[in-house]
Image (tube, rainbow, N blue to C red):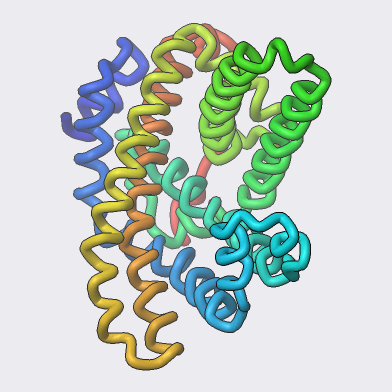
Length: 294
C-alpha cells in the first residue's frame, strides 16, 4: 500500500490486521536508516552507561544468594548494588520513551499525504517537546498498576486463583491503554490522565481487537528483539577490555531496539485508523502541526 493509498483509506474503512502489519513493515524498511539513527541517538549512550555501571557493581553476590535460596544469606546481602542497577534501568527507560514518541510522530505525518514527509530534525524536535508528557503517561501507568496491586492485597486467600486471572487481564488492558495513550500524547498533544481518557475513547469501540493487535506487536517486538540481539551479540567476543565490551553491548542494544520502532509504528497506525473511523472522527479534533522546516 502506497502512502497516498494509506492516507486516502485510513479514514474511510477499518484496516485488517494483515494490512496494518504490511503497512508497518513497509514504513519500517522504507526508513530503516532513520530508525537506526534514532536508536543510536537514544539507546547508544544510555546502554553504554548502564553496561559500564553493571561492570563495577557486585551484582553476582545478589544473584548467587537468590539462586541458593538461603533465607539467611538473602537477608545478609547488600541490596544497594541491585537497587542502583535497576534504578538506572528505570531511569534510562524514561529516555527510551523518545523512540516511541518520535516514531508515532513520523507515522502520523507519513499518513498525511497532502504534507511533506517529516524530516528527521522535525521528528526529534517535536519528540523532545512531547517527551515530558510521555514521562507523565508512564508515571500514570505506574500509579495505576500500584493501585491495582494494593487493592488486590485486601482480597482473601480463597480468591487467589480468580484474583490472579483478574490481575493478568487488568495488566493487559492497562498496557493496551498505555501504548494508545503514548500515541495520544505524541500526535494529539494529550497529557497525563487526559491522554488515557482520549485513548480509551478511541479504542473502546474495538477493545478486543485493540488487545489482540497490541499483543501481536508485543510478541513481534520480543521475537524480533531476541533475534537481532542474538545475531549481533556474537560480536561481544571482540571485547577484550571493559570499555570495548560496553561499546559492543551498546551497539547490540541499538540494533535490537529496532523492534521497539516496529511496535510503535504498528500501534500508531492502528490508533489513527480507529480514531478516524470511530466516534472521535465526528468530534472536535485539534491535531498539532509540525513546522514546515527545521
